[in-house]
Amino acid sequence: MKQNKSSNMKFAVIITLVAVALLAAIAVFSNKQESPTTEIKQIDVTGQPLFGEEDAPVTVVEFGDFKCPACKAWGERVYPALVKDYIETGKVKFSFVNVLFHGEESTLGSIAAESVFERNPEVYWDFHQALFDAQPVEDHDALWITPERILEIASGFSEIDQTLLKEDMEQQATMESVKIDEELVQEAGVAMTPTIVINGKVMEDPFDYEAIKAAIEQEIKDEN
Image 1 (spheres, rainbow, N blue to C red):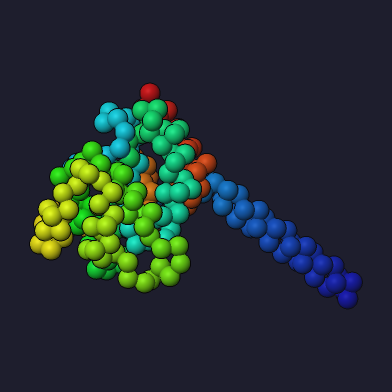
Image 2: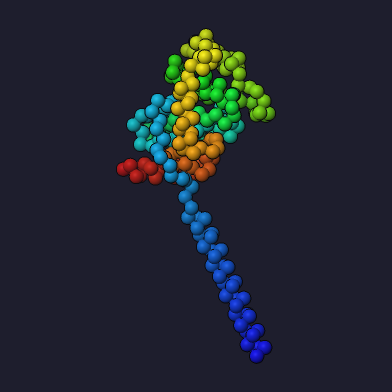
């Protein structure tokens, strides 16, 4: 009788271990099958800054903040490869949507960038990059996006009328454009910066360039 009980217990333990192993295998398999993207509605980039061919089959949108250190890092690590591999080859058009997660400084930077975009669209992307370049390497929370600093950055561009830029900042002349960006942020459910969206697919890891490439290639394939 004791032997039967012992055998039954051993059998039960073996069954339990097998079940646990199966569940673990299923979990690992499921994780491997997870998509690195989340589907949302295609972002309407009408009126937004665009870099690349207008008829490019793939639209990549960055939701970013000039005050955000991760956005600066993305611009240094991932963006140049995206430009070289896809934007310059006519496969991707790139757009930037302002996010105001850092309050007044984010708002001021966005107003200034929108002013340059409206008055001098030909130098917008260079000014955009100059703003990110001006971001401090350390002490990110320190106040640095100020009217004075923005005008100092703008002084490097002969096309920009600093008097008009100063007036636009003081009067918040481009606030309507900034509010449109805020609406896009809410519609897309953006919770972090940078958020990268490829034809309506949100990348799980904005720094995973291989996943970005795979998503772009899939979109190009689907278009053909």
